[in-house]
Image 1 (cartoon, helix red, strand yellow):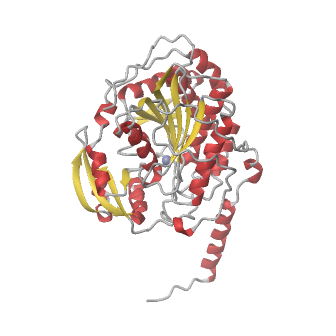
Image 2 (cartoon, rainbow, N blue to C red):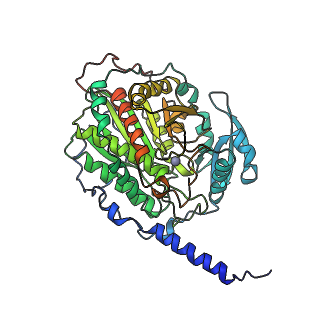
Image 3 (cartoon, rainbow, N blue to C red):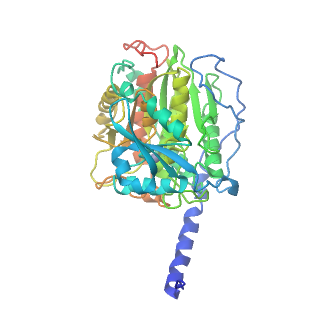
Amino acid sequence: MKPFLPGPSILLVFVMLGVVLLRSDVPRVEKALTVRAPVAVVMRGNALRAGDAAETPRLHRAHPAGMATPHATTTSKLQTDPFAPVYIVTSRETHQGIRGLVRAAVARGDSTGKTLVVAETRADRLGEISHYVHTRERRCGGYFAFPTRAEAEAFVGADRAKQAMTKTVLARYTLDNQATVDRWLPQVQERRLYDTINHLSSYRNRYYASTHGKTSAEWIRSHWQSIAAGRDDVTTELFTACANCSTQPSVILTIRGAELPNEVVVLGAHLDSINANTYTDPNQLAPGADDDASGIATLTETLRIALADGWKPRRTVKFMGYAAEEVGLRGSNAIAQSFRAGGVNVVSVLQVDMTNYKSGTVTDMKLISDYSNADLKNFFLTLFDAYLAPRGLTRSSTACGYACSDHASWTNAGYPAAMMFEAGGPGGSFPYIHTPQDTLATMGESAQHSVKFAQFALAYLGETAKTAGARVTGGPAQVLPVQ
Ligand SMILES: [Zn+2]
């Protein structure tokens, strides 16, 4: 075999590439410094009593994290075994395209009558599978991942998507909390959204099986905890009861409902990131500024404004940063399944995954039309038309396919969930997804598009959780027990 001897011009390209990679690895210190410093707040015991149905089941409370250090050294023991078997559940259509990457595929049906495929693959092939879904199907995700075939089969066997997507199981969503929402919307600050995205994208990656993936999650927990300082009805937790999330926890902040504590409203985004070309490398460069630091920033700004207002909800609210979304919706699935097993009464779920990219003449937001709840989708449109359209914003909708983001975990578990997605570009979605170029620089060094999503999330929060003590016309949610 002829050895490859690079010529001078090729060497120059490599040197320049190295400089570019090093440059993009340097955090913008002057901007990072403006991020509110996380404060190690000592947990004030269990604000929720043991046995309180609103408490997150099976949570492992960890000690409050200190200041995370971006670019901390990655230990090699976290290296994912590239040949480790992974069992995926995907659609028949996606399976057709990835047949060469999986083995021992079997067809199964879900509760909606859709044909799904359970198949075995390897950890190092998940990147190629994702690449196929991105480039050929022009969408994200595409599968759920499990450590054993038995768990993948059990997941399909227990599927409750039909229940979750039809309208009979739901809360009666109402629009009657303008007093709160109208006060909140002008308070969204682009600068704060920018700072959170900037901090999170300054980690080398937030890959689920790297030390950065763990420390960045712990930073989110600390940051949320500092925002909630002084509130004894708010707790933060690290959710680690996920068998295939490696060392990455999910983060959950809970505001206990003052009047309807057993009815739970969820706002979620995933906290991990990935580089599709170096899929199993714990040292991969994956800033993930849009995907999905922008979603975490959207939730963080929503939380900040609600708590700065002294707001107390009627219903319990849970803000969630999900682990390991990019490798098969693992964190959100573990949470949704544990909530179902614990009988937690989740009345609605908002997913925000990518909120800060817009290019050209496209609508400001897209409602994801599939694998979500019919009533909740309609309510999202009602919220948009009531609160965002008057501000000159426009909407459209699009399908994103099977298992495209964490709302699908809730749908599978039988809970009403829906997702609002960024505008993207005229040709489709964000061109730098899952690359080292997913940075604020490729989004115009601005978080202006996330401002709209924070406003949407505030409208959702105020109108689904409602304000304690306020006169509301909707009454308690009508929610059937989760079976
Ligand atoms: Zn994402």
